[in-house]
Image (cartoon, rainbow, N blue to C red; front, side):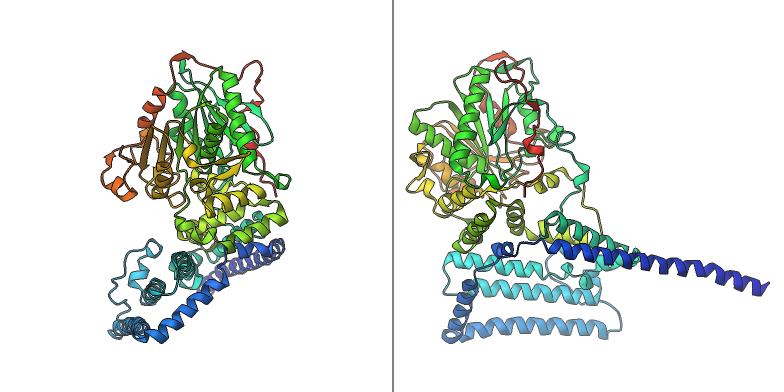
Length: 606
């Protein structure tokens, strides 16, 4: 019986070992196929793209020269930095040694600041991971101090050096490497390596989708369909040209204000950020306030749009949309909203209309819109000649500024949140990206026409012509002071793209007699897509626009909750009497397709 038990035990173990070996072989076969796919995908990569986010070598050369100059003129200061770093590193090493010498496997005391990247308890309790984390923190601190104390650099050079050195610090975080990430190692053990194979599958899929470029997928794209569970408000496309589709949304009230509203979203992204889902849809909310709403959906350009410039967006986009909205509604004027670059171009359009004597716009609202680029802020590295020269070379070759380049640029401004953390989850942990509508929209990118991209970067962003000597478009020299209609600006307190203080500087220069400026809590998207029902983010107001930005905020009044109702009361007061609700289109503007239209659904041109 004993022999039989032993034999049955051995026979019971054999299938487990065989199954493990079979699983290993299957995974190795999958890795081999994935490696072949990866090689093929990387072969499609355009090598010129890598230079677009790289620093000018002269910057580091100048920083190095400044360091050696400091070393010769003030060696005590350099020695002080080095001695401080070395002392802290040795002290850290000794503390770790003492903790291990106590006979217990524990880490020394850890007084480093909290950091979401190191949320796993092992970063505090395990001596190996804690040693790596604390040394990384010391290294990062030393780099930041070196940049801050560097002399011989102007403010622009210092900002660039600070940005690129921070990119190095973020990239070298121990969480970004499998051997020093306890979460990824634990998952690999638990899944017998399956998480790593799935992670490789995710990596290969992202590189294939990016035509050789690694653009980390932030959301599960299979979870959303534009027009079904995002961008699903009812309406009709009532006009179409090569630049845009004009959507008129169905009314949600029996009566509406006489004067319609038209929204010009940015063409760097797609308009349905304002219509993600019913609960947070600004588009739906506006129609519920008794306003006839039109929204422009921009074309996603391909190489045939290489010579399309800012003038084309103004003439065939803004002015054409305003003309058609007036024709459909029978009104002489419209109210307008411009979001981000859509707001910048709305200001240009208003300046042009002033020159032409066109009074078709009654009021203008700006969402996170920059018109004064004197303070380039976080975008400083991307608005210098080295970067824009690279953009010009790219568009000369392709005719367009491709979506992934813009996406990567914005992502590097928040690299931990938008690159490294998603990459860790997807590539190291083998997780499927989350089904998050905002991140889905963020990944649904658009190209920019080559001519337009260079005009915007050179004339508006780099030379700041709109608020200085004026910028020439459509045969006129346009200046911010040409904007004279009543204006309302919504900015966001933590916006890393259009900083509220910089938006304020441009808004002050508008010559409008009626100006309202609001700062919403949160950032570029969440501060705008902030429905009243959420009761989440409040906002600041102050009628005195003669103050500087800091003083304006110090004297501002804070109001709990969304800015939507405050703006809603203002726009209602500017929209005329009530009239019977209008269904989309008219006899000369038949419905061309249901909202959200065809342009927004078109595949990304390459």
